[in-house]
Length: 266
Image 1: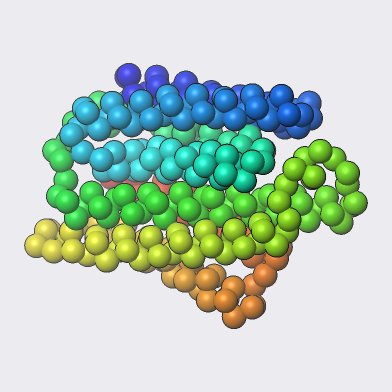
Image 2: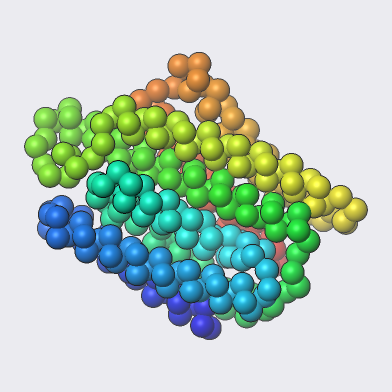
């Protein structure tokens, strides 16, 4: 229950960060409040994952619930770091929406509390590494989707010749496009590494239907990531098309976590 409460509070702060700059204008004070709210939410989620780690004595990626929370945590960490390094108010504009959804979505499942109350044994080293790499892949893909959403918003603002503060605050289209490309490529490399490590982890272990399904989903996702990267490098997919495909790929990746969890708990 402690983990659920901490996660719920984190999700509320992420929503507060989102609301801070999306309703009432993107003033300097609102951007600061959005960053602080995201930082506080990040602290609560860090506490939740740390408690889970202490409770199970393993990295919290063993279940789809834990994986989703770790993905959200990594996404927020990326957004906080990027916002701080570029000195622009990215946090709260779009990034907190997927972060809040990923954080709060597991709480809506009736199995969440019972599954998170268990303390399964620590997995093998390869299995833990497989989960961590998969979480990184999802997080980078989520960040790519955020950059893609920012790209589409900036493109619309330029097309409409908007002089809004938010439009001026966003990076250039070229910067956002390069960010999407880099994040999608990094996500693909992480997923490939996850699949390779997962293959080592499954050696000598009885492979059931759930494991086969998880590997199939990972392989399908990596194939799409690789195809998108190749199309980008070849110049076939650029600009708005790249942005839309990146968002669609992230949505697909998250939707695939649902049948994985259903197969795990049933």
